[in-house]
Image 1 (cartoon, helix red, strand yellow):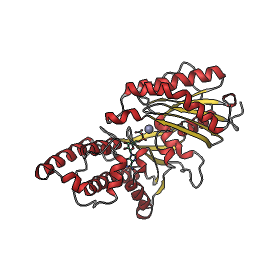
Image 2 (spheres, protein in one colour):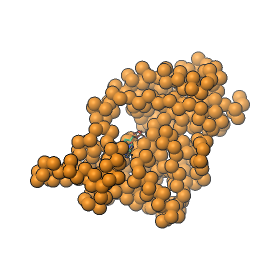
Image 3 (tube, rainbow, N blue to C red):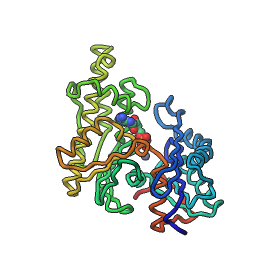
Image 4 (cartoon, rainbow, N blue to C red):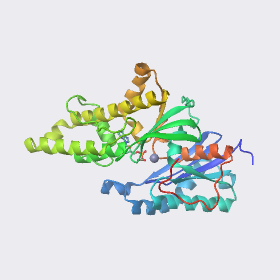
Length: 340
Ligand code: KG4
Ligand code: ZN
């Protein structure tokens, strides 16, 4: 097959977003995401409900992606899908659908690692975006992941640091919940933080290995802090929301920068690409931009729609793998704990 002029469908269903995208020679033609609202009332993702919603959404989402790209499914060259890591019930929906469609259309099937896709999203062709040069460091920060990865080539990646407990997004969301904010609280913390004093309150930075992260202690520290302060003043949180959020965000952001500094020192690599939903955070964005002047780093932040869970990143990996001849066997199965 001619791998130079291809239309690839990417399918993502690893957590609570059902997504489909079409890529044509590095350019995204459509990128559709159905975000499942059902989880909001539970304050977190309910796996059983997520798989049911995927089953409901998957056909309309793929159909819309094809329509928006203005192509027919018969024009597809290959189908790429998220094999893992993620929630098993959710992965099964995307995997089964992708396998069936590829079989029906008699086109190659390509399995994609979700974490690798967050990183390779940097290779989507988008206006004003420079792709990273190898080797670079990838920082993936979201509600489900916190990792620093040394990326030597498209397919050679090594995890050099990661969280030993909660993900960074959970640190934001769980702290926000303690503050009485709605789920997911990360963006709200960010909004309040922009009006607050980041030095007003001190929160601890958990001590773990230099490139690893730990966030569960931070959430507990926020809980004790709130309990102590509200015992003295029941309106404490309401009256000090901006300063609490600013101080919390300052702690998290400087913790992330500390870890990146350690990774730069350890690897000698100072080109950094970030991805995942938390890369929307204004504090992280500002700190990374400042690091260019301060430490001489080169940084890459993709368009937000390619940062959060999406299928465009699955489609770009599909394209790269197709070019490299890395096709899946039709007996491939979903893998909840898939590693690189
Ligand atoms: O990548 P994503 O959409 O889904 C996964 O978790 O994989 O990331 C969602 C996470 C949530 O924890 C959300 O609170 C957090 O990203 N988030 C933010 C911001 N925007 C989204 N956290 C802090 N500041 C933000 N501006
Ligand atoms: Zn993700």
